Image (cartoon, rainbow, N blue to C red; front, side, top):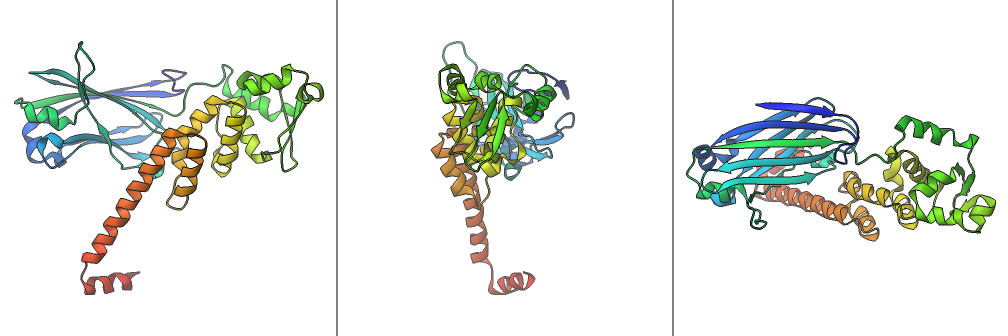
Length: 334
């Protein structure tokens, strides 16, 4: 049984929000005997067109059994964030809950499980998080009813109260009434509005408020940033959006976020930098994350590398256990 709601506007820090709720009844005997067969798939096909799967991940013992959720399909290019809340009642101990936030999702993370750990709801003090097997192992009830709510969103809170198309038009037509000129390291000349820059950066605000060259002549010289990189920063200051090409200039974008104290840009990069990671650029992106103190991104990039290495080791093990005839046949196929 499931139902869903679609929201517009800024709700709970997500610009566009889609909420889904459903109930999943799971047979306890099935969990003990064949936990890998206990799955629930759900398609959220309103604004985001996603497919999800909730499954139980067996461990060495019953108490190690984990409930996991994974994203199977997502076809849009915008970052996708998810919040998952699960409650389940064990008739002897009471209600247990699991709450987690995850995302943004990269293509490389499709099909990767996120584990849902449970805490007993009690008014006394916060309880430790446990695998679901901890609940199952001590219970004698025959059926567990999971009440699941997950919320999807495609970006964080709105950056401006003005409509996005209005700010984009102001950005695209800024040459008509701009009052500041920015020169970059590669000789590009970029115009902007002082009030927009000042509203989102205390550094720019101080430049234009004191008797400095930036205020008197209306010129800001950026010797350490390229024009293309700073245009991405400028688009964010006007619209709150990261340009699709930001990954090609992520070092410059983050350098500007640090230099001009643009915290929302820094935080957004911390969320979306892992979506750029591949086997080829892992080391480079990890250095970028460490340099600019993107702690969340650094952890996700390390996790990506760990998964990739595990897959590589598994493939090597499969190869070493093959017979010589099978290896020759595989080489011939290649």
